Length: 591
Image 1 (cartoon, rainbow, N blue to C red):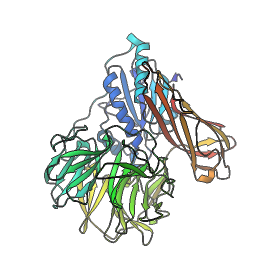
Image 2 (cartoon, rainbow, N blue to C red; image 1 turned 60 degrees about the horizontal axis):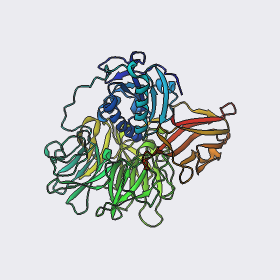
Image 3 (spheres, helix red, strand yellow; image 1 turned 60 degrees about the vertical axis):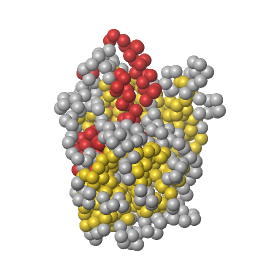
Image 4 (cartoon, rainbow, N blue to C red; image 1 turned 45 degrees about the vertical axis):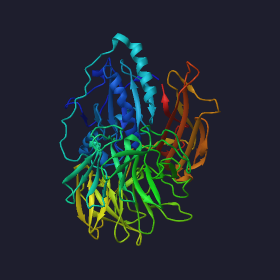
């Protein structure tokens, strides 16, 4: 693969001190484009994988984030600017709200990486995460190839002014037994105990620097902590330490921090329902349900359980396919579950953010996953009324109100919504909030974590008012395909690696559609990176969902070899037409 890289075009540049950046002006440097959007947990994983590359190759490498929004809110200039700060992005970012550069590079998935050599040619494309080691190997090859021709230094990144607020993008709140509140101060990598006025600080837990360390309250380190859970004993709080891929335990008596589950390393394998793992991936929230801890495991799009005594983590529900499908625990799809709450009847409520949905699981024999509100990966908006027509936009939090109805932190709509199970209707309780991320019922008020305003506020619990807002779909041009189409996944292992075929074909390809009736043939899971599909022209449109994994091992020099797992999910809007191409090529890693 070697084609001239299209120039970068968008609305504006961030992290450059106001200057525009061009590929022509970067000639002589290696450039990596990272197509991302801030709702996407896989994009956040990729950001973390790029940090070591920036540190190792910063003299010759420029990483450019191309922010390509999925949701309407993600196209808001202030929201993009806040996200760049929230996620500690330390390279230039092109704000591309119209997907101009996204389309120019034919990106099909978040995240997508494009590598550009010093002469301005695209030499590699990669989709998904876990490309860090292979990307580093490719950069080393480019350094060796271009040698003295490389332009060193002169990186266009200009850090923005440092913010100064007491809280920075807080994520979650819980009430403590003594009448105070504990908040995850996410961007400060700390927990903060606040008095009842929600402003006066009682104490901080954590050193305030990104890291993974147990110990005393002043020495322990977190990395973007999110969800909190007070254990029934009342003497400890569990913390979803999201970027450390761990669940931590805080002793409330003295603030001592220990690790209950996770190692700091991200889980990169698909774990089936009922199976256990010592590795986690982006735990986002926690709840006490059925005598155990439930974890919203946003990374693999699943719910897990966690034994609070032993730390054993086990998959409860979700196949790892990103999408909306109800049913048995081992058949259901989730999409970045981010908020949990338990009702008085034992129902587990889930804010399923990437499909803008409110899901529920009943308590007792035969429990299954059901959808209360939500329509799919690419449908969202702000619309009240009957639940079947109501729309949310990337909700992150959920709480059960005293009357048994459910309050939803409708994050990207800047609203608090209410779902009433008795009437099966949705209403709006409050609007004009800055990315509300969590809710807590406190007497007759609702404590709202207003994350992008860096504060907590109290709201009365009103009856609600109806909003007849717009419906939206993701602004991606549908891909037209012929009824009979060959799907090919491009995968080239990095230099020094080979496909691990010791135990058979090391690949897995899953294909489903929404609606299911769109796919007449070629669905399901099997080995191989090529599949013949039959799409129904009578259905005409829908979403093609493709999930792939491939295993590659290092070439052994001493008889031992480390192995790596590459995986990606695509959700591709498609239309079926006789004039459409008969092949669809997707790049997992093409060089």
